Image (cartoon, rainbow, N blue to C red):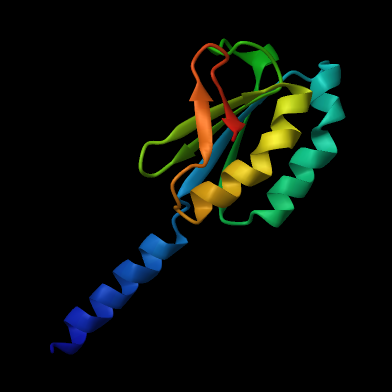
Amino acid sequence: MNKQLVLGFGMLVLLLSSVSAVSIDYFYHPNCRHCEKISHFIGYSILTNPNVEWNFYDVSKGSYNIQGTPTLIIKTSDCREITLIGSQEIPTYLNCELQEMTTKRCPTGSFNSERQSWFIR
């Protein structure tokens, strides 16, 4: 096999493996007591999930189509999306959802369209 082809393929595999399969959009307000309540949890989640791309949005500086703060929108490269809202729902479900999405297993949760969130069976 051509040496350049093998090298090119290896670089492509390395590039694709370094791209995050999961990204999280975190919407917060600087004066939100619920956002403050989970700030340590968010920090811990960032440290324990280094392959996740985190994007932070201060809702006081822009207009976003969300129901409240704090809000996390978890997205995968295969177009799955999960929304978690609030200082109770985010700590309860985030780590489980990240584990499922980063290992690319089928979700064990059931989506509740009325609340726009996931619940573990």
